[in-house]
Length: 496
Image 1 (tube, one colour):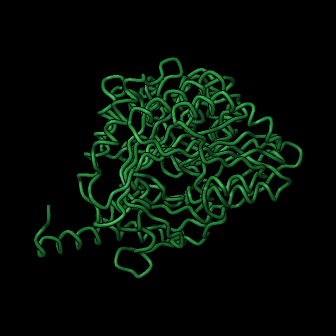
Image 2 (tube, rainbow, N blue to C red; image 1 turned 180 degrees about the vertical axis):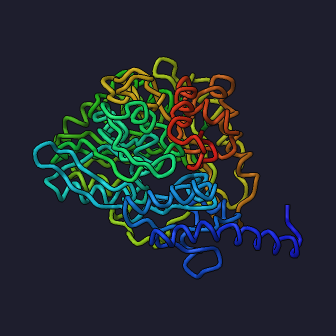
Image 3 (tube, helix red, strand yellow; image 1 turned 90 degrees about the vertical axis):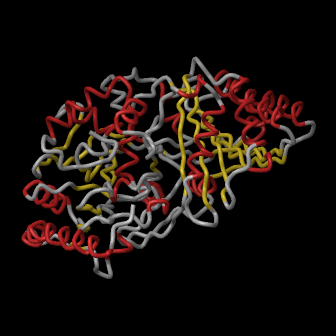
């Protein structure tokens, strides 16, 4: 829908006028901010997923330099009945950090300190994962489990899930959180932990986006492994049937045989390309890792008809992270300076450890990928990441328990992500249909599966999104929201 120019002018005038009490309040607390129309505004509201650009922009971006700035922002939003959203890294697939009239940009909250006695790191919620990894390693070779994209912000990552290839060994990022500093309500603040505000602490670890504003975390770090073995096997399958057989073999091996020290994923690309990549953590013994992988590699060789292109190498902790990222770990720290973007749509599925996808479902998926052309200028990727399997720390806590937090998928086998990226020609809705076709091809056994909240699906209505992301925890999370943010000041389109 496009408004006539005279009506659009009236809307802009009204929203600008509505921002005045808010900006006056922010000014009274000396919070740096910029408003729609200023030269500094545009880069601050540029979404990671350009599918959502242009879009109705927020009115005001507040640049929070301190925890107290965040308190002032929440207080001003409450006093002026303004919704606010929070932008840390800004990698939300649905651009949810830019979804309210007031955006609180917390990128400057990026300090890192590590206790030498406990190994607990106190970390600003605005830091990006690559910078976090570098800072922790510099503080005595410490590490936490986290994802592979260096530009992702900790604020969303550590409140929704936080999977990386070390997660089967160490757990998710939410599992490393021992306390989180939260601003809520009308600007109140608390360090939530297992012993202080335990219900808020439970909810913030898995469903934190939209409950309050996380400004800092205390993370239990671990000694980064001195050496690990990184490995990748690359195939180009000529037929959909062969690709499905390979996926079935990989899926079974991971759930039955992969030790907890092994993290891996399989990635499917156009042209029949399938990359199986992983890391064995804590050893530089390449011969041992080859022996471990030998049964799977032999099965895949029989399906493929020849040896795969193979890379097996010893890596250090930071080198391994950069290798998985495909880029340097260090990223821009100035708010608005980060400039990585895509134009895409993705859907996720979380399979149950006890009920993997059937061979028939995998055959239908590969038949779709091989037989249905993507829209012009669009590429695709399907990722299967192993979450479960022998000894996986992700699945140790019972769902709903204090240890598990609100992260619901504690019986997961694989998280599957179906992703389509627009390389040329601009966004078109046919991309959504193509991705829906990937998921739909797998039939009824996939249609009702849960979804992974960090891969937000903006096509889902709020109620369905909450059910798929948080399952049986929805009512409990909603109760926490009512207690700590009764006016609904902190906003997330799929939140509470």
